[in-house]
Image: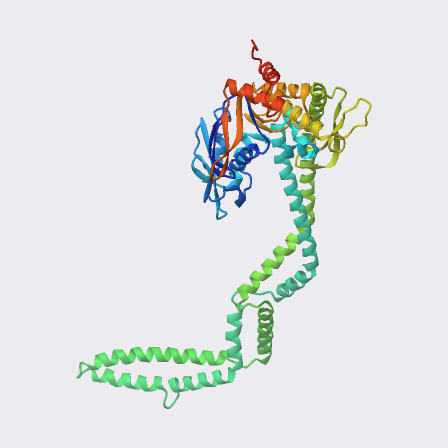
Length: 555
């Protein structure tokens, strides 16, 4: 419930503080007094867009605050999801506009985005203005009305979750088929590359081994000649190092008998002799192992050419990198070979999901069909009391082939103001006054099925008068027993139905003209209703009629 509205520096409003209560509140005033300005301020504080012209001329900043009692709203989850401080009793919305063009929004003094403010505002109050009558021609609005009456909220939530899953699967299938088609185009190329790598039969360490062998084979004669010379130096028959060491060792052994240090010389010579003698034997063997093999060299060169060409082609430097590329190609081919199976599996899952979605859509349609009958009957009964006794109203429910976000149904509201008239879409056949009355009836019907605690009607009574206006007032009065209703009106019949009556007026000062509002007392209310009946000049008859409308004893 809206408890209060504070407006500062907004258009023609200097400072304005209004308190609202339960029941039906009516707002009246002369044309141009500023009723729409107050409505605009309320719209801004619940998230509507603003422009620089909203700020009163000469002011730097505009502030609008609306306080709501939210004890019956069950909004705790919304506050938790949006990381906002929650008060189980009161919620304060504030909007600040600056002459510079900046705008700030707050919920319980915490800064929020305009989207969050708008989402919360929609849960607190429904502002029904003249332009909202256009919604009656909107098929989405019509479907929403039917779903509210059918109490489809839980079923719709489950359906939309399944629909999102269904759409995601469809997108996944499209992406998979595109990937499969692209991969099929690349398949020959991948197979050719893989065949080259597979035929090469690469081994991780072979490049190093082959390059070493290539060096040996390329210099076989030099290596063999060098080893021969080393062996001859070590173990030659005339001047070999081993032979000389053996002779030196024999001399040292002889000296040991009379020169003690010769023992150390002997041991060291013996060690050197053993080492060099072993080395001479090994170089002799190595020399025999080395031989020039042009055929083997050609094979090694060809093998290395294969490796080098593959490395250059794939822009890598090592055999392990080539082996990794080979593995990657193998995986790609496996994936290509499995695409048909993946596509078939996904199609089967989509078919199962579609069937589940279809079943949910069928349950939605059944409930919508039942609700449509109730809506047609109740609306015809209600609108008959508003001066269209022969009206016919039908909710036309048609099935779609493909599921949509709200099911597989299309809704059209068909209307005829005459018993024998052709039923046509509302927007094509109903007049402005008739649409206003239809919207009021629809709002009254769905009010008992929603958790919206407050509704504001902005001159919904345009185009009606007399008894019809009185009946519209009765509908609003009935609504106000279950929820807070605020209505801006020019009709005395409706104004007289209010529990509270607010009067909007302009006040001129030497410096400026400002819009003001105040709650009328009983006497002031009689005068205002009489003015609405007769105009600026009050008469005894208009005052008497006002008292009658207000159900005040003329005695």
